[in-house]
Amino acid sequence: MNEKVINDLVAYLGTINQLNDKSKVADLVQKRFNLTLDRSVYYCDDFALRFSASASESFGNTVLSLSALQKYDDRPMIVVLVLPADIKVFLANTTLLNKISHSSQELSMTNIKGSFNGSDILRKLGPLPNDAANLVKLFKVHQEFGFKGNLQRLVDNTANIVPTGTAFTPSKSAYENILAAPARAAGFTQSTDFLTLKGELDIKVEEFKDQILIASLIDNVNVRGRVIEYLITGQDEELLAAISAGLHGDPAGLPQFKTENTLGDFERVFDDYLTTTDVKTKIMVLNSNPKAYNIDKILEFLSHDKSVYLFYFVGIDTSANQRIAKTVLISMFQKDLMDSTILIKHWAGRNSRGVSQLDGEVVHKLILHPKSNIVLSEAEEFLVKLLDTE
Image 1 (cartoon, one colour):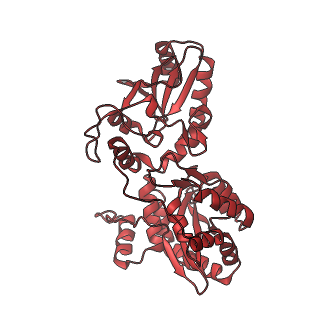
Image 2 (cartoon, rainbow, N blue to C red; image 1 turned 180 degrees about the vertical axis):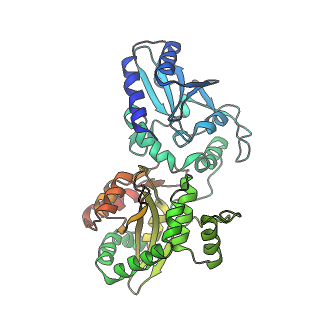
C-alpha cells in the first residue's frame, strides 16, 4: 500500500469538497491520479474508487457488486460520497462490510453474488472510525484478512445463519486464573524457562535460515507466513523436506499443506508453565498489522492455571543484504504491545467476542529494541476489557 498516494487523494478531495457534483468530482480525480475506468470503478495500482452522491452520510445507495469488489479487494477500495456541502470517504473493502444486500439469496462460498449498499459499510472497526483519517490504518487491518478471510462471515451474515459457536463463559476459578495470567507471564519472562524456549525457537530459525529468507520473498502474505511458521515449528520431517525442496526450485513447487487453526504455533510444557507461542514474521520494510488472537480462544487458554501466551517475532531484512535481522520472544502483556493491540468486535461473527490485531509499527520497534515490562494492574484491566467484550 502506498500511504503517500492515499494521503494525497484525501488532501485533494479536501480541495474540491464544495463542488456538489459527483460527475465533476469523478472527472477531476480521474485526471489528477490518471485512473482507469472499469464500469463504475475508477482504479490504479494503489487504490480503487467508487463515487456516490447523497443528501446525507447515511446513504442507502447500492455501491458495488461483491464480484466487482473481489477484483479490487487487494488494494484500498474507497467510496467517495459527494454531499451537498462536503465530500466524505469510507473504506469499503470486505473487512469493512457487514453483509451483502441485493440479489444475494444465492450467495455462497462458491457463488459470489449480490451487491452491497452504503448502509452495509461499517462506520467503525474496533476503535477506528471509518473515515478519511483512518483509511491507511483500516486497510492494514483488512490486509490480514483479505477477501477469502471475509467471505464466510459475509455469507453467514447475509443468510442470517444462526451461529453455531458460543462465547467462552468462564467459571469462578477460570476467571481467577485469567486475571492471574499477567503475573504468570511476568514470572515466566524472568525465568530460565523463558531462555530455554527462546533458545529452542532460535535453533529452528538458524537451521532453516536459508529457506526462511527465500520464503520471505513470497508475495502472498498468508502463504509466506504459513511457510515460515511451519519451517520453525513443524514436526513432519517429510513435509519440511518437501517445503525446503520447493523453496530451492523443485519443479513440483511448494507442497500443499494446511496449518491447524489453533491459538498458537508452538506448545512447550515446563514444570510450572504451559506455554503457547504464536510465530509471526515481520518483513522490516513493510508496514502491516499482523493478526493476533481470537479473544474467546485466548481467554479459554488463559483460564488454565499454568498458561502463558507469547509471540515470537522473526524480523527479516529484505534489502540488498538480505538477512534475519532479529528474533524476539515477547508476552502478550508486554505494555507497548498490549496497549496497541487492536480489538475488532464489529468484524467478528455473532456469539463471539471478536478478534485482535497487533500494531505493525510497535512490533517493528520491539524487534529492534525488545522489552519485557508488564504492568500487572494495567494488564488485569485489559483482561477485564476482553471478558466484557460481548
